[in-house]
Length: 108
Image (cartoon, rainbow, N blue to C red; front, side, top):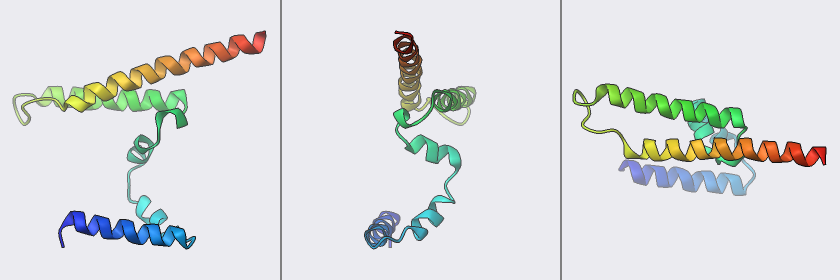
């Protein structure tokens, strides 16, 4: 069985389990996923400003690591990292602006 077929089968089993109210197997699988990957899976608007800032910093660290390897072990930086960095920067800016607007609305 190839990996994609295996993944598809596992997804079907998880869906069936969830329909029957069983989430233990899914929860057990999720324990093997690093915390950072779980956080990255969540939509940014679910996260606090601090958590989005942490994701932004982690993305910048990935970019820096790839830049340090250019020409040796990799030929180019993953272009999705720069796109992700811009998205996260905008999320941080928007969150700070929203926070300021809420603060002003509370004063009124």
